[in-house]
Length: 590
Image (cartoon, rainbow, N blue to C red; front, side, top):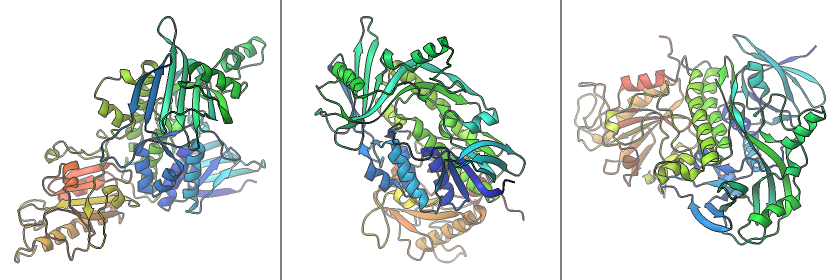
């Protein structure tokens, strides 16, 4: 008889997405188990690019330092056509964006996340494969087999499938995975070269055939290590998995290039490239004479583009490659999956505790599937036409590639636009970073994202305490104001009124969030000090917060755990705050 074990959430798949989901759940003290069918972490530099938005998420979690220590900068790309340099693309972002682009091999990303997860006493249960599962109204029963052949049964409140393009979870649910495959095959290689090209720059070198079309290709992404790159190249006929599959079908041996589910994506069968295969491409296309050495890993792979029709079914949810696959153009895939996990985990944490508003979990699909659709469409377009054919402003394009413009303005969780917001961030947008926040005792100014680090649900109250009539109020006579005097009607005391207003809204926020929301005061640079306030007080000493958030009067900003604005309320009011939090938290009876 198989003994049934119990846990709040079972996560299947310990790649970057599954590790992120488990880490975010454990950070919130949710009981979680993470299983993976592989016996060990694979030493492959598959997903390499890390976007600035992902680094912001890791900053919020408290693990960005370890990632930065292991990564190398991605400063740009050198573009060569027929041996001639045609472009030098600089990956430049506005100065208010706290992080640039980075290159980090997937095995290092997984190591950093696994070590972070270990802080919470959770380890990957390796060599453990999900065989089947069944769900009912109260939970999910999963059947697994360990490396030793032992059978296990786990009963969980929720099941999260982060098990890749050939996801058992997705297939068991019967979720459609529509799309197609590119006919081209590529070979990947992790090697060292001895050229003298600029540090931190990728290389894209192509050869044009008589018809002007690309008939040979080399793409190199820098990796940690002296002269080390992950290289992508077209596959020569003798290494073609598709050709091998055709030969196998002709001989009745079956396909070696596709999984049984027909999804041709990722490393395939056949002979792996050797150094001589890589060197042959470098001899044809390298912008400098160079010699490849120290081959760490190589593979032949194919690319598909597919998207599910839904991200969840009852108590079972999917994320990452289980939900969307697409070309590696712009390094969007892993980053999109990590953000799937981040979006899902804080909602699952509330659902596990029974504190989620109706519809909160359904918002995972409502928010993330449009993002998946946009990313799949954009990367396919860039793979076919080239990123330089994308219309629009180059700076906007760069922000989009950095995943800083992705948001949830149409989400059922976010509030309506604030008429006073002007050109500032709207509900559903990423909460921008800003500099110059000062506080007593701290010797140096802080960034807003530093202030938010390690926090979950946050209410930012921005205001001025100089008696100019700005207020936090539900309407005339509410008695909650900044600069309106003592709530009891005594003599005006700007800092005291600010404290009273903030304290009252903070108490309401804490009550309606079931004890989860922290409140921070952000005072204008010319406001009286917040001395005596029971709330943490920061001063917008440079006016950067006011500029980035287009805050011209007292405003309340609800910042979600994933770093997006849930609401912008100006002037701050009990009614506006209650409406915003009711979309997220269960309304307590009575």
